[in-house]
Structures are given as structure tokens and as C-alpha cells.
Length: 473
Ligand SMILES: [Zn+2]
Image (tube, rainbow, N blue to C red; front, side):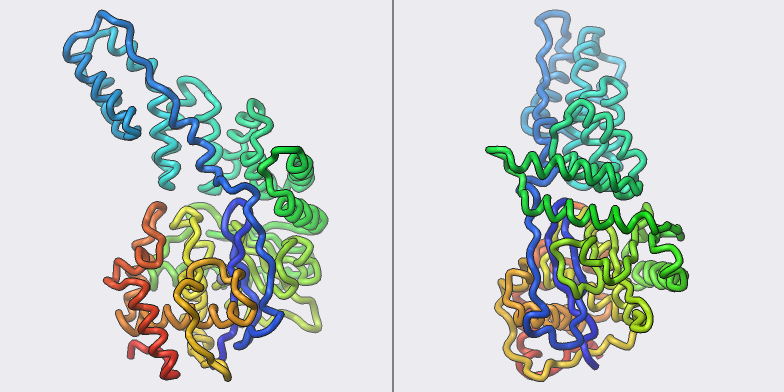
């Protein structure tokens, strides 16, 4: 059986995007080539709160402290000074509820709480634990709405895709810090979720203008692509409508794709249930946004992507749909939706951190074809050798077009080899061990099943040389 789909990973600003391309077995030649969108800034926004964690604690004025007070104070201070912000806050919280401290100590502790809460909140945010982070940052804001706390809440709600709450904190934060370009960029994404494309376009225009200023660290080319895409989406938006199902919000062109809406919703909901049941991937906590575009408009809404993309995940699942008479085949569409859904669900469990390409594309191909007609593997007519180990880790777009196509097939092949080596439950074991702060190196990903990447690679390349499809049966 032929490999139905090949997919190329594409890094874009604000996260990792994955695109699915039609490949039909041999993605060899120029059709596999694409361009890389560089991040707008080299610093991810979660590092933008580094200053927040460096908020200082103050030492109390001399006098009025008992030895018990001083011992507690020193413990809290020492934990904070060594960067154990969560430990410092935990001790502070238990001291607050204990009866054996003086009024002087309590006064001092009260003054330290905003710093402790903000630092601990940001520490959790960086680990992807926004549930706890939000709790502490909200406590900090209740005492004093300082920018670092408000920013943390905006970022956390954004990460959790609770866009209404995110918007509230973005507005508060940006009113005070109107030139924080990373936050402005994230805010355009919030605006897109609300359908406020004109506002998003305006902000992106400002950012492009900022990128032109001397000394700017902003990536103008990438911002310009974002602007172009947003303008394309703005044009499309006037004729689009949105419907919601249990786990998805589907936006589509009114009157055009309505016959597909029920099919797409059902395919996605079924896949969420199947991935949960078979592989332990949790259902999303808030709806995943899915947008269907007429295929002739797809390039204008995904500037920088190639014309032949069959789907893309960049925080939203975006799907081009062909018009009659060359309508999109529903079986193909099903696989594309399932493929992009894997990327979406992996992003949710691992806090949108970048995965090794072989893993994300191998898993997306394997799961999207599970129990489907495309589950088999067919060697390409000229199979060639197995690619070097290094080439599977970074973006496949760094490879030549020919090698990129082969990398996709071999990624799937490695995932099949894992199942052959460790049994049918292996993928479930790996996927259920993914968390917001788990080790996403190739070795770290293989640790739950007692393998390392070299072992997977060497077994896979042996199978490949023998032209043998790995099988657990
Ligand atoms: Zn993909």
C-alpha cells in the first residue's frame, strides 16, 4: 500500500506549525520543497517573564522579630535566593496560617507575598503548569495588579486557549506596556480567535514598522508573512461562519462547505475518542479551532507555506477544501484531519514545545492511518539508504527536497519499528508519558519503553536495508 500523505514540519512564530502535504508515496523532487518561517524573535515569550522572577524580597527592619520569626524568615529568604520560588511560597503560605509568629513578621511576610506569588507563578508557567500558575498569579493580582502578574495570566490563559480571559489580561497588560512586541504578537492570535481580523492586521502593521527601526530584534520577514496571512484571513472572514461541537470550533465559508461540516465534525470527534481510547491522548480542555478555506485561498491565509499543503497546524487546524468538480475526497480529508489533530493534541500535552521531527511526523502519520486503509507501508521504488541519525531531529525543511520526502517515510518506519520491538502498547506508553515538562529529546521520548534513539534508529535502518516492513505480529 502506498503512503498516502507526507508532511513537513514548519516552525513559525509563536509556536510550531506542522503542515501536511500530499505526497502519494514519493515526495521526491521540487514539490516537497518549502520555505522556513523563522521565529519572530529568538526569545520565546515565556522567557519574557524572567524579570518577573527576579522581583526581589526585602529584609525586614531590625527589631520586633522573635527567634522563631527570624528562623522562618531566613528559610523563606534562602529558598527564594536560590531560585526555589515554589518552595519559598509554600513556606510562606504555611507561615501565614501558623499561629506562632509575631505581628511584625506577618507584616513583613505580607509585603513579600506579591514577589513570592509572581515568581512562583512564573516558575509554574515555564513548566507548563498553568493551572497552578494561574492560581498564584491571580492571588498576586488581587493584592496588586503589577504588570508581571497580569502578563503571566495573559500568557497562561492564552496557552490554555481560554481566549476570553486571555483577552482581558492582554488588554490590561498592553495598556501599561504598549510596546511589548512579543505580547502584541500573541494578542493578534487572541484577536483572530475572536474574529477581530482588522484589529489584528493593524497590530501586525505596527510590528512590521517596529521591525524596521534600528536595533530592532524583530524578524521583519516573518512578521510580514504573518501580516500577509492575517490580511488573507481578514478577506476570507466576511463570508465565514463558525459552528461548535464538543471539542471543536469549526469555521467555514457559508454556503460553500456546509455539506462537509457534519462530516468534518464527526471525523474529528471520532478521532479524539479513538486517540484517547487507543493511545491515552487526553481530549482537549477547550475547543480546538479548525478553519476550512477554499483551496484557491489557502496560500493567501498561510503565507510562506507551499501551494500544495493539504493541511496545517499552527495553533489552529487549517484545511484547504477543493471545489466541485474536483472535490476533496472524504477519505483523504479524514486522514488529513486526523494527522493535524495528532499535532494539535501533542501540542496540548507538551505545552506546544518542539518535538524531534521523526517523532511528531512519524506519530502523526501512524495514528492518522491507524485502523485505516493507509495503515500499510510500501517501500518507494528506489528506496535508497536510511538517512543519517541527525537529519531526523531538526526540521525536515533543512534537508533537500528529496531527503525530506524520504525523511517522512522513514519517520513512519521508525514508529512502526518501535511497535515491532516493544509491542502494540509501546506508543500508548510513550504518549501517556508526555507532559508539559517531560524530556522531549529523542532519548527522553523512548525512555518509558526502555529504548534509546540509537537502538530505534539502528533497528529501523536494518529493517530498511532488508526491505522488510517492521511488524509486531
Ligand atoms: Zn505533520
